[in-house]
Length: 267
Image 1 (cartoon, one colour):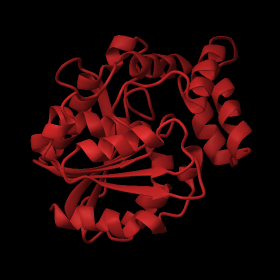
Image 2 (cartoon, rainbow, N blue to C red; image 1 turned 45 degrees about the horizontal axis):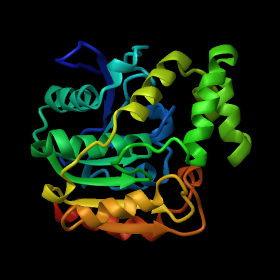
Image 3 (cartoon, rainbow, N blue to C red; image 1 turned 45 degrees about the vertical axis):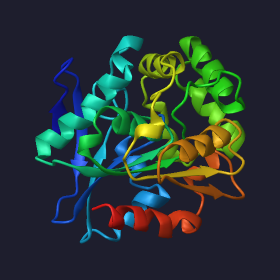
């Protein structure tokens, strides 16, 4: 199986490279999502139809899928997570790539823009923001409460919390989520809640950036819009009729043209 090794702490990072001669696009999924589910996301599914134009590289976050699963919060520091991605680029001999970050992956995409902008062609961030994570948003609070409950009930506590909003997952999706390591997820989430802002200098960025967020995403909408206003030249798209969790299955039609412009205009 293809793995890269983080040069800072030795964590092994699983990835899948679809290959080809196209422009490389790193795809970073959401919280709990292994690559097998990320491939099914609306954006990834659409990009897989353009395999001749783009070379898709899917990367399992640390703590997820087939990557290493440390259980200490310090192991999920943003700099370490960014270095996971750099390790994959180096393993594949890729100098620069586009990055598409979905939710949890969107926060990592902001970290990539902050720490290794020289490796970035563009960033497409879906459903995230780069500031300190507010503890009082309904989704953040629900995830935090469910992860605390997972100490006794296992990862099913978090799966049930999500299902209370979106309905029961299909059996394959549910099985993939139930295979997650609850202790690793608690550590990852705790690190995100305590790390503060990903960047304090967004106005100095020179990275092409598109930020898409659901109009009903109470946790992240206003902060995402603020970030788009601070990053020079960034574009912002609001997706009507859905919320943060709904973005997993929402139509990408409102954002698709802008996504392609970003990927094609920055190559």
